[in-house]
Image (cartoon, rainbow, N blue to C red; front, side, top):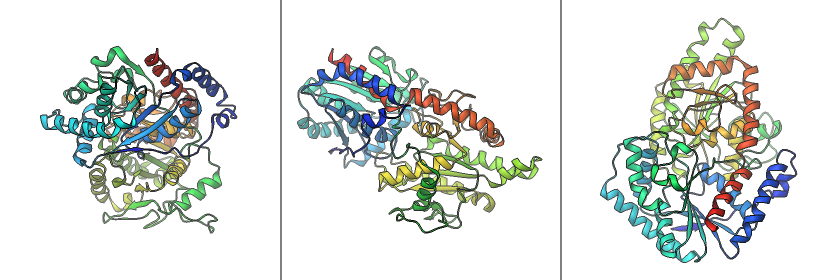
Length: 486
């Protein structure tokens, strides 16, 4: 099934350019587009991925597509789906293989399934596409379909890969063996890091880092009253006064000791406005390093009783760990989410009652994108430290987002995170994301030293402003597309 996605209204380039911090970037983007846009006359740029919500790609595309259309490049966003749910189980396994995880094996049945669904999607997508159109296909799920349509119609195309690993392993070789016949059909391939490029694509590879929209609901500035209001409307705190706007239709839910979910203020308010907060927000994916983070936090909390500094001891006693992610069943291309949540539920129920009160697993509703994004934004704003403890990470906009807001970050040394965080300059970095003791030490250094947190956060915000905003990303993608059109 192919669904074209309507882009909601958002800020114009003039709105962005009105900010003194964004004027120069918008001007550079417009200058590039003035040279390239005429070459797109009579063509449509098709941007295709596998989901319209959940994950960094789905969050980046709406603003990119809107900007391209405003620049005079007709762009349509399409999302693939299939009733063959085993296809998404295969592509999730493929995702893990390209991250170096899982059994390093692709069977003939896997190849047949990928080819079958790609042909079925081709039959639906091809009639929508014009003979002079251009394809920009994101990640493995629609890569086969795009290659088949491209070959049949003789189209120009780019494959945009947001995942990868900076090692050559049996797992990565297995994953690439399935994709190679398809992705080599594209004239250009775009990766997040040079280390991710397989040898057979080296002659056509470009490196463009993902980026964020500074005015999106997830990233726009929030005043203190807005933060308090959003947390109250999302059900994350009990409001001290009656709310003027109504609560969100679906409130955040919190894992309970018995394994069920209830409102986030049950069994008691988490005190998000008053206590130190350590948070990781990501998909429910084993590669996000959830379990070692919980264990590292437990080590840190146990140190409170022996801490001689009364001020820091108070911090350790009061600090809360939030593990937040999308409602597990709401993201269709991530079938592992329910399993991972079940694993984390078992870990949580194994904690001591004292620690259970200071650890919260939060399920963020996905029914309303705006409400979800505002909730994450407010959580970033109240966090003392945001952690991204990924064992593997293609890039990690979940780190970029708090960096942009001036919230200190603690990340693993996964390749994607190394593209944006300079250790000791823009944030703290863990060498071994599976080592709870190292996680505890790094968290302790940040929680103990407010001045260091401030300096790291200031540098991080500047770095995102210079390197990882949507205007730079679109400009670089236009340069790649320009090579297709001569």
